[in-house]
Length: 471
Ligand SMILES: Cc1cc2nc3c(=O)[nH]c(=O)nc-3n(C[C@H](O)[C@H](O)[C@H](O)COP(=O)(O)OP(=O)(O)OC[C@H]3O[C@@H](n4cnc5c(N)ncnc54)[C@H](O)[C@@H]3O)c2cc1C
Image 1 (tube, rainbow, N blue to C red):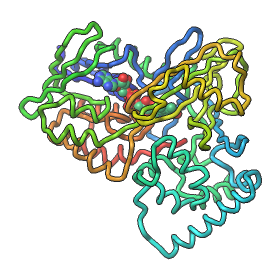
Image 2: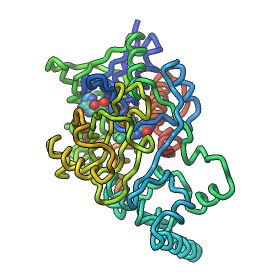
Image 3: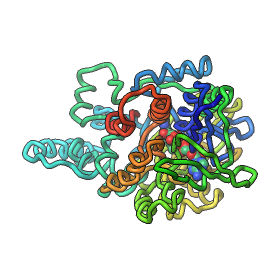
């Protein structure tokens, strides 16, 4: 007999991790509602002819206890261990990434190397006399790396991915830049031969047939344990009754309006949607939700008749002449994902919803990217077998100065409704990676299963807000 119903909104890796663990408990009736026709969200893969394609480059790497063991148990022989190889393209050439001090000093134009060194020295002195706390992303990075390196790499990359760095909260840098500063990078290069695994991943895990096998496998297991998946179904309303979340309404793939009564609600869809899903809750909620902004992501695919073309798995492009921030290649992650004699190039970038590129047709966008890619001499136009894009709304949380106040106001709903859990990259508005999303899913499941002590919201400050992304 099922004693309790848990509804999970969203079948990205976060929702699936929660459903996967919850489904192991026979007393629970687990339902997952997902807007798209397939599971995985941004961690999914899809097929195009004989190509298996991810949504941009995805490596699985974690510093969290127990997550890799869980992954290995889930994936068995499908999981491979890969040596990581990443680069950065600047001044017309490729450099290994993170940049090596020696390369910066010997291969960068002399004027730029001197600027980086001089500004770093000046910054060290400034830090010595001033102990002003950095508020913005810009201040935080300059304080640690100096303005030279900030202007060459950090500012243009931030501009492309997150928006104006002078308006971004320092929290973004804390999450995204694992290195504590140039001095530690220099020390590492000079005195240590081994890579510091808390700063960068030397190896990572990857499933042979695409990253999306991780969420697919979680779905397979959860389904075989009795969890019910409503795919192609969009959540339209969250109902409240007697101080609890009582039910969820959604439009099924057949267009029918359905209602699911629930005892617990695991929320992994964009947090800012909650205002529209609870329209009668308070007029303020909707207006606060509007202030919590995200950026969209576009991945453009060039399927090519070619041998592999990039010098590494992915390459960052900070310079302004490239609209995109990164190129990556499926074949480099697993050769089994592309047919013999072919490769798949992925071009990924973010944009605000009002950015003209968001509305560009695939043809126009592809032509623009081709003209920017041309000087790189990676492939010729007649090698392109197919080209197209995949676009996702509201995926990159914008950590603008002041965002935390608005976010906290929305998160207060969890204090009010003890059966509501905001988790995941978009569900918690937490700029995190797949391993951390899985962790959040497992933690929410354990809380529902009564396997952990303490207040649910305590986990946020103790654990979720402390995640750091390791490149
Ligand atoms: C280009 C790129 C590269 C990345 N590289 C890495 C990497 O190397 N390693 C790593 O670990 N992570 C990486 N990430 C991050 C990783 O993709 C995310 O952390 C993860 O996908 C977030 O999962 P999620 O389940 O929280 O969110 P999502 O994947 O966004 O899942 C949310 C789900 O909710 C659904 N949904 C939304 N609204 C509704 C609605 N109203 N009703 C029903 N369903 C709805 C969506 O369709 C989606 O499936 C990368 C991301 C990108 C974009």
